[in-house]
Amino acid sequence: MKLRVLGLSIAVCLLAACGGKSDAPAAGGDAKPAGDAAAGGDAKSGGELNVYNWSDYIAENTVPDFEKKTGVKVTYDVFDSNEMVESKLLAGASGYDIVVPTLNFLGRQIQAGVFQPLDKSKIPNLANLDPEMMKRIALQDPDNKYAVPYHWGTTGIGYNVDKVKAAFGNTDVTGSWDIVFKPENLSKLKSCGVTFLDTPSEIIPIALNYLGEDPNSTDPAVIDKAAALLKTIRPYITQFHSSQYIDSMAKGSTCLVVGWSGDVIIARGRAEEAKNGVKIGYSIPKEGAPLWFDMLAIPKDAKNVENAYKFIDYLLEPQVAADNTNVVSYPNANLKATDLIKKEITGDPTIYPPADVRAKLFTFAIIPPDVDRQYTRIWTQLKTGR
Image (tube, rainbow, N blue to C red):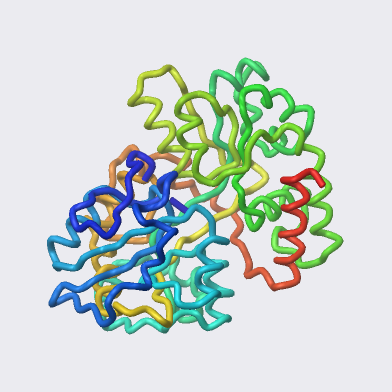
């Protein structure tokens, strides 16, 4: 899920210096798939590499340094929802050599046969990864056969401290999903802007968990309970978007988001840098919240496989992994990188949750097709009001 201090994109140009989850697609971006790249790129002889990653999700020096080190020309395109990358993968011939889906989407994409198994001998830095996290990931990627973790994080509540205080008298209300799912609460914030991630695969399970149901339930009647709950608060949601809320929070034009942890932390940093008086907080509600992993995987039809391995291994170098975390404020699974990460990040419980909070976090299951169709129907009705 995602560097927001950049706003540029690494495109075909070798010298472009930026990355990940930006609000705009890479130059040439999604309008021109990277499938036109020459086949058979080789890290030793330069060649090409086509990456499809979340927007604002990488340090500005990572790709340029990789290009200088290897001579590989990187085309870096971005997306801001799992649904976007999945549609490209399932359509076939995506043109990408590395994609970065979230674990539950990866799981069903593995079932669809869109990835090639990893040759782990070509990724020596796999030895740096946390064995416990790898075990957890293996529940959806058995034997860690197809993918490598890039970053992980939580989905929770981002809020404007002063505007929440003005509405409720304090910020204690942000410690519970009540501020989101009780209409009498959310209605108090509509005038200052409420944004939800535009992704049903996260919002619906969050609603189910709040209702005391299994967040990964496949029972249509249970899922409809989440739909009914979301319908009650729909009048107070001002926007559905999975990337724009960072800038709008930093500028003070959005006061509450259901969003990704690192994005909210980046918004907080932007506001501090701008010295505009906007104070931003992030909460992992007491009822529990999603824990997710974004995974590096190689599509079966990738044309520059050797360069893909080279880049994955490069991302797992401790200093590179630490540099990325220091910029995007998302944790990584690289144990050897931990001591290289800023202490204000590793010591922030909203980024690295303590054990008692982690105990209440839940992961997303693979969504079967019938549930996916129900999610899509619910989401369409919710957004359109039909």
